[in-house]
Image 1 (spheres, rainbow, N blue to C red):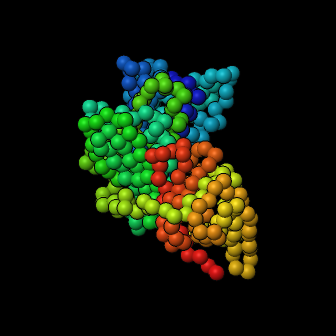
Image 2 (image 1 turned 180 degrees about the vertical axis):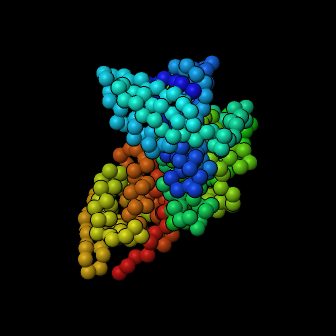
Image 3 (image 1 turned 90 degrees about the vertical axis):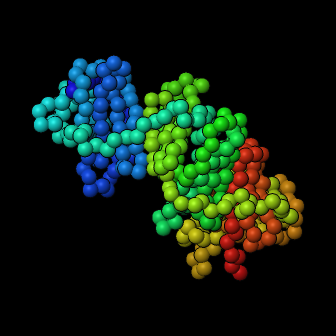
Length: 381
C-alpha cells in the first residue's frame, strides 16, 4: 500500500471517525483506524469501531499501490498534529513496509508506525439504500439536539440510555426520557411506505448529529441523510460517511400518556432571561439533583435556591403573561430547565402547569412539533 493525501483532508476525516475508537478494549486492534484504498474511485477509506458503534468515511487520495492496514489512532493523531506545514498544503504519504510497519512521510519528517493487519478487524454490516429513508439533514439534526440530552446516563436503566425512533405514516418521532423528564420531537412530510420502531443508543444519535454538522458545509444543499433500521442495527449514511450502531433491545416505556393534555396555570417568559436566572440559581446548589423554586405572579417569577447553611439565591424576573393562581409555587431541577432552554430557539417560551406535583409542559412557538415534560421536585420549606 502506498497512498498520498492532503494533511488537512486527513485530519478532517479523522475528526469524523475518532469518537468511535475503543479506549478500554482488551483487543488492541480496536484502538486502531482501519485504512483501505479504493483505486478506481481514488479514495482512502477510514474506519473506526468500538463494536457497539462503527463509522466509515472516505477522502480523495493519490493511490500508487493498493492495500490496507490498521494503525494506532492516538499515535497517528499525535504525528499528524506535529507535522510541520509548508504553506497552505502538505501531502502525507503512507507506505506499507515489511512486517506491517507503515512509513509516514510529511514535509521533511519520516515516521514509522507498527500496524496490525486488517484480517482481525471486525467486518462492518452492509448499508441497504433500498430499505433506507431519506431525511433532510437539518430536520434530523434538530430533532436529535432536542431529545438526546433527556436520555438516561444510568447504565442500570439500559433501555432509557436510548432514544425511541419511530417512523409511521410519513411521520417521525424521536423520544427520550430518564424517568424525571421526557423530550419528544416530531416531523411530518416524509415518504410513506417504510415504517420502523427502534431504540437507538443516545450516544450513537449524538454522534450522528455531530457528523451531520461537521459535513454539512462540504456537501450539496439538497444532500439527504439516509436511515436504515433493521432487526438489530441502525445505519445512517450522509454523503460518503456511514455510521452503524447496535440497537437497544427492550420495551421503551409508554410516553404519550405522560404528556399533560390540560393545564390551568400558564406562564410566558423570555427564554434567554429565564435561562440566565436559572443558571445563576444553580450556582447555589451543590449537586445535580438539587432544586430551584419558582413562584409565579402576574408581574414576575421569583426564583430561589439554597444549600442549607452555605448558599442562598433570590431574583425576580418579569413574566410576559401569566394565567392561574397568584403566588403559585413549583420546583424543578435547574439543569432540566436549562437543557430545554438551550435546545430551542426564539425569544419566548411557555410553561404549562396544573399543580406543584404534576408534570409541567415546556413549549415554544418556533417548535410546534416539540414536547418537553418535566416532573417537579419536592418543595422544601
